[in-house]
Figure 1 (cartoon, helix red, strand yellow):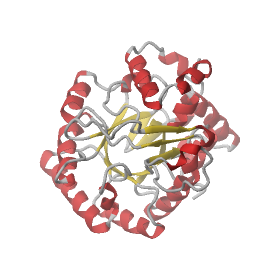
Figure 2: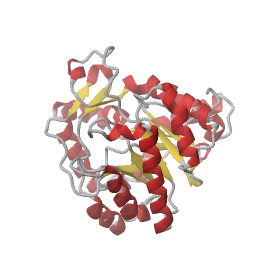
Figure 3: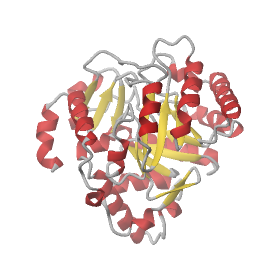
Figure 4: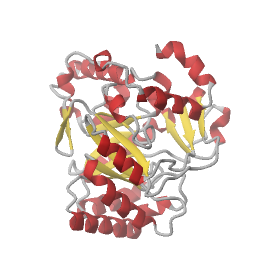
Length: 348
């Protein structure tokens, strides 16, 4: 169905197409059985000590305001991440702010954390309990005077309904956000988050989402802080605001974060380096350029415990999860691996 509709969808502005997708998903009419596969038990895995049916997640950015996560679970995702959620409602940057780079199988976005705000989203999830493992990605408002306080507010308010909480310090579309990769800034932020966890008795795991544009010599420092602060996960990685030189599409110089195929090898190499530094003691979620079982397997064998996609679904439609699962099952059988967990880090 998607292959028939795709020319029409791609004739629309990308944000208009996205809004239409959200509206159609609210109808929640597609049966879960449409996306089931045989022998999926070989893909069962654990993330943050919870059993998942498979390691394939939807990255934050698609369901920004937690409107359609239960419809998305029907596509066969093992987990969903909503957000980025800010304390107050935010409209984001001026439009147009999403660009398809079809020749490069990529997107550029400069959305700017548009979402309905933490209070609305808390109530929405309270009224519509998740049918699966739901991560909530949080960040600061653009005009905030204190970014740290915004993270603390969102963690306090939203953790109750989260399976895990992602601390987004890596969007290139919020000024100053990536300063949190600095060792002192990150230490201060993680200290504050742990203080909130202690005061509010928050048990949910925390992951930090990092930039693909960091220098390799920063990785060890980040991992040391993550371990010392008992942060349970690292998401590798967000979009890049570099790496445009090899792109073909005329829209390649639009400002914003680049995702999709151009990010694939960059994020895989970063995953390997983080896996070596963490020695498997911190869970890694791999993101960037995943659109097939092969690319998912590459991320997992590089050291990712689980993976997320977004741009791949834009180009290949909702059946992408089913196709990735089928291909992964075939790869595991060919490699004589009994479970997807056995593949984690074997090529790191």
